[in-house]
Length: 215
Image (cartoon, rainbow, N blue to C red):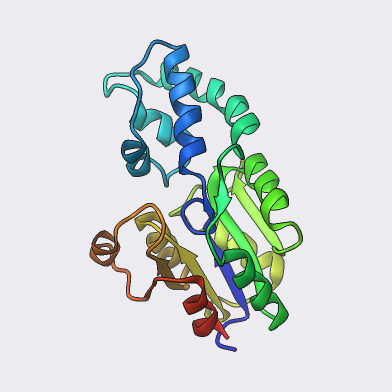
């Protein structure tokens, strides 16, 4: 086995969360008198955490205080609606089961708020991850390496024994900053050409390809 640990991003990598993010965002925007955002716009806004999503969705002239107010309104609403339409990508649960059966440790790191990360992992991947960590105090958001380093420390795994799997430029930079090999998936929120421009070297079309690389 090439790696002892597989670290997965969440949104766009193991779960298609885009519709729930867009629906929740547009609900809060409408409640506060702001215009709606398309699904494709939201696709380009995600990747750097919920507060950055809110900031990108609001008019460019919006002040920090207003961004924070909308952010605080969004969190409880999204918590209630984060699994309305969200689903695992085809083949991903089976991939994780096969990795674990082969003796590979598995983890999730996400810029999504930690409570939502924990809830989604239980709902869709109960018992399939050794560690899951989202955005919370004391751990800088990706592409800072903090969340990956937290996982490595918790599981006592060296960097050269772990691989990071994600779908965005944030994930590519996170793996680079953490000193891990990176696998970029083509089924997520970014196009293949863009991922290559961001430095992706290993790209896969299916979860089965990830299994073959690791095992």
